[in-house]
Image 1: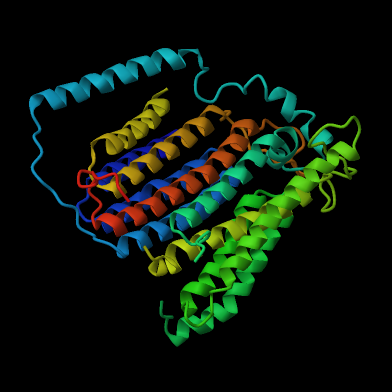
Image 2: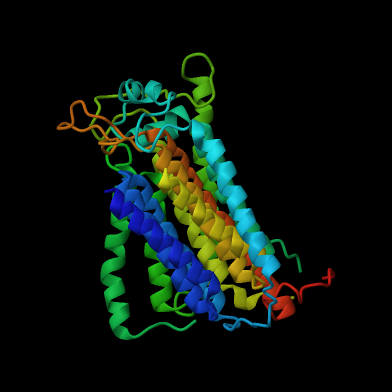
Length: 175
Length: 146
Length: 112
């Protein structure tokens, strides 16, 4: 199982690098689909089918909106000469090294991959089905134990739709 | 935006109601199987988007559909808020967001208190939100005046 | 631990896209890749070796479950990521109508 997870992650990194370096914008958006659908397979390997369902439909809607935005505008990317001196490459490598070193210091306190559950979750798993009454533990958590987060998420979705309608000037235009 | 050929239109007429029914099934069984309100809501919106893409926007007279989906989205989140405020009046000690309906046997369809009601209202709100987003970004952007 | 490093490498690729690129659509793609990597990292923390899907049913009597608490948080984060990307693309449409280009060095005048 670990081998398959490695291969999927390496494919996602390759897809992301290709999508950012492509010259044609349509190829960039289609290569961005590799990252999204690879994430679906990774979620299924980590035993989380709720997340895989939501990620499939969300990725499809994102691809549809991006392709429609691109096809109504230019598709080429203007490319001028960029100076890649030695300072840039050395500076980038130093930055990556420092980032990985501090990341190692920060996550040194985590248990190794796949060992224990978090300390808070023991209070949610054992009496979870009896207190909420639902067989699906994830749904019981997001609607009963942590209901405020779901309320916040519904509000953010509503506000984003109002924002899109206002930016495109479809509502609130008094003639 | 023009529609597609006759084969696509016929297949859409047959399939789009089945997709809508599948979305309702995932929303209502949210406390028994994986899924829930969010995935089912997006699938319900997907069936309407299917209809709009294959028939074209001139055919369906979409000018008043956009305000209809906005009203549906607002009523979905209003129902969510009303159910969560009712916890102050009915259940126990006046706490916001308490699960006050009786919880039946684990594993039946009617169980788990207010969780199926929350699932249905979130499903309606997410479906209407994504339909409004799609109509605003793809169909109406050509008619924006400066 | 190598899986955590690969996940952070995906985050760094997205960060490179946001900082370096000049096209507006490439910046939006870089932001979305960063959000995906953070969701994957949260799900990786909650994995238990030999665990199963956290749903009770009649044939699963007493087994080890995968942690359901990070999954509940990532479910919220995925939908919020989509809302943010849609709003950014709406702003990109308006910028293209006004300046007729996606290049961020041409968008200099702050009027309108």
